[in-house]
Amino acid sequence: MRTSLACDLNQPIGVREVWRLAWPMTISMLSFTAMSVADTLFVGWLGTTELAAIGIASIAAFACSAFGMGLLAGVKIVTAHRIGARQNAEANSLLWQGLWLCVAMGFVGVCLTPLIPMIFTWLNPDPQIQALGSEYLVVRMLGLPVGFTVIALTQWYQGFGDMKTPMVANVGANGLNILLDPLFIFGWGGVPMLGMAGAAWATVIAWSVAVIGLLLHSRQTLREAAWRPNGALINEVVRMGLPLGVQRILGVLGFLLFSVVLGWCGEEHLAAHVLVMRIVSISFLPGYAIGESASVLVGQAFGAERPKRAYEAWWTATWLAIVVMAICATLFIAMPGVFLQPFRPEQSVFVLAAQLMVIAGLFQVFDAVAMVGLCCLAGAGDTRFSMFTTVSCMWLINLPLAVYLAVELEMGAPGAWWAMTAEITGIAALCLWRIYSGRWMRRARGQNDAAAS
Image 1 (cartoon, helix red, strand yellow):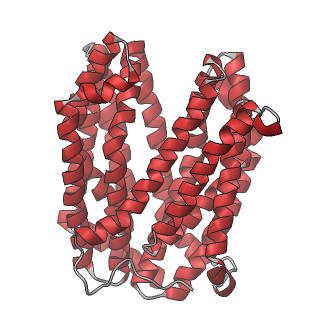
Image 2 (cartoon, one colour):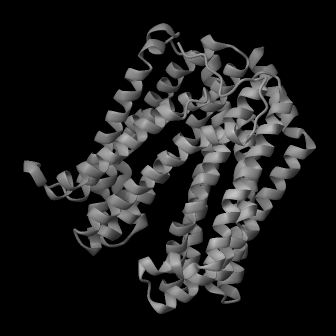
Image 3 (cartoon, helix red, strand yellow):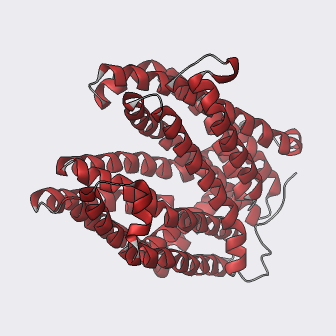
């Protein structure tokens, strides 16, 4: 049975401890990005209609799973708390509790599958896009139980501070997905040609292989841990994860509306936005991985009732993320053309995208503070404040300001990105206030006392 800590509680938390957890997660996220690009590339060979359809279907698939992804993050938080408190039996039992939650959420997702044609009627009026997108999304929805299981197992391993095991599983699955894509999409090797639906089947099969690998790796824990549903543990996971689920689904909706605002400004503005968002993920991925790694260290520190270590983890991770993202910011501002030229955008799109690259460079440091702060607050169990912060800044700052600057003042995409900069700055400021005020400590202690009782 697993009993490990992310690091020795008597050892100070430095850059090495944070990066040791962050680099496997960075690689895992990069592999997922590569898989998404491969899906888009292969489907794009089928035609422009298919490319448009998978773009919309992928967003819809993410929206359908966003709430579950946030909810299952509670598995990592509670596991980290139990490991820090040396309550190893409950930490191991959380593997089973996460799987029970996957069964429940996967069943709901499968039951909602008949509504997919209606969803695409709202998303796009083109009948051909509706048909193709529905085929893809039906398969993805039927595979939700498997997808949620991958997430739950990944979160459980990460709660122990084991980032390498899920990294191997996710990189292997994403690599398999890329290999299976042309077989199922184009019907190579005697496999029937399934078109867009083939991309979805490749994803579900790859997820299934990842699940098998992770379950085999954890088979000793599965045999020895308490497997029956534990109402107290499941309730604690839901209490921690529910605000993150709401945060994710409202974040996806807000991002969609932000894209709609850019669409009002014209095709060039929307294209420049999409292009630069892809580029700035270069800095976002390691920054987010550093934040998630810090959340594990914070969670274990709170479970061990070592608040000083929680501050150490937050402080170290924040400065590490600032350094990494400041380097990217310098490159974005100094040489935007180097990043944009490989995409060969039209001149009008290039000019707009170059402006967005400068704005992206300017908010990198604030984004580092915001990402690490949100992750650490979640690791401490202060998930309600994390939800309040992100939702309020998105819906009360970003979206209204984006409409005013981009549409009313006719600033277009640069105006919308200044609104996004204001949102990120607001999140960073609220996270700093919450942490420096000590309120996250009191919130976490109250939740630990409630769990103990």
